Structures are given as C-alpha cells and as structure tokens.
Length: 278
Image (cartoon, rainbow, N blue to C red; front, side):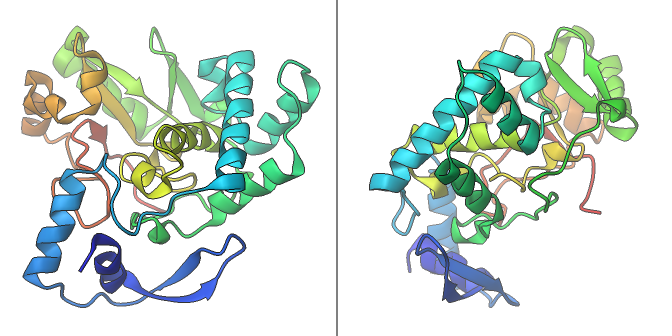
C-alpha cells in the first residue's frame, strides 16, 4: 500500500470533488494500520523532501497560478519589510499590492487561488495536524505582540513571550528566536515557496511547512535555534546540539511534531509548543 492510500486508511475516505478536481476528505475513526503500511509510511516521512506516489502536484495553469501569486507575495514582502510582512493580514496584503504599482494588484484568479488553498482540507496532502486558524481574514493585533530585538520576529505577549524569556535566561546568547508569529500571508509565502521549488508539489511542501491556516505560529508557537548553526537549525542537526539537549532536559520541548508522528509532518525538534487549539 502506498503512502497516500495508507494515510486515507488512517483518517477516512474521499466523498466529493472540489473546485480544482481534488478530493475532499471526511475524517472518521482511523483503523489500525498493518505493520507493512506503518513501515512504508515511516519510510516516506523519513524522506519527506522527496516526491512520493499519490502526492498532489500542480500542473499547467495551476502551477503558473502558484508562481504568479508567489511572485506578488514576494514583492509585497520586500515592499512592507520582512518583519511587518510576518504579521499582516490577508486583506492588508491585498491592499498593499493594489496601492503600489511596484507590486501590482492580485488578480481575481490569484485571490481565488489563495482562498481555495486556505480552505482546502490539508488531509488531502497527507497533513493531519489541527487547524488553529479558520478565518482567512483573521488579523494579528500589534497590541498583543512584542518585537524581539535583533531577530526581526514578534511573539505574543503572555505565555509565548514568558516562555522565550525563560529559554533565554537558561541559555543566553547560545539560543535565538528563528521564527515567531506568522500571519496568514507569511504562511502563504512559505508554503507556496516550498511547493514552487519542488515543481508544484503541495504534498511535499506540507511535510515541512504547515499549509496556510494550519500553523500554530499563528497562535503562539515559535522556533528557536543555536547561534552559529545557521540554516541547519531547521534540520535534524539541531537535535544533536547542546541547546536542544538542555531545552529537552528543562522540559521546553513538548514537541508539536515529534519523531515518527502520525501527522504527516517531519520531526521538528526546534519548534516550541505553547498553545493548543482553543
């Protein structure tokens, strides 16, 4: 049984066809997978950055639409600044694009594409995490945020910020914030960038990045890294660091996506879990 079929048996059967001709899943109580199915699934997840049979891959006009939408998102990000872009809303992003000729307004098709991919059931990709943000036009209030110096990132006041301060107190300059609050537009650009870099493979993108609406960065989670490790902070290399070992020992690594999880998501030892879905 291939990975796609296995994931369907875990979480349900397809019942309808959506706008783009992709199946919409209805969740049910999962049956017990066979030992072989589980082995195949874990093998595929260990190779999360490779294409697998059953992946949803955009072609032709859909791939062109992904690329044109991503291009405008990147222009918007450059125009408003990376820090501000991380927290702007969907409506504000569209407004910025309309106002500045250097960006150009998003077309009707591009807006519909973003709307569709936001509301699309990510279980179709093989992503079975919860959806903490259900409203495409939800906003992040700056009054609820604190900008972390020299990081370009924001954190929510309260538990997220207090958790980060405790981590900094424990590890000092050894640790830093690599990714904080992410609004909807930020998650769009991350998810689309990963898919575009892999020939439009949305399933592959979902194994590394939560689809828009499914990221817990929108409600409080954040990522940390070890100073000097660079991009390797977003790899299993982080799990071998002193920073990771000390965070684990002190109980900070209540992982959102642990090793061999059944959510269709790679292992993320750098992801600090703060909140549950309310």
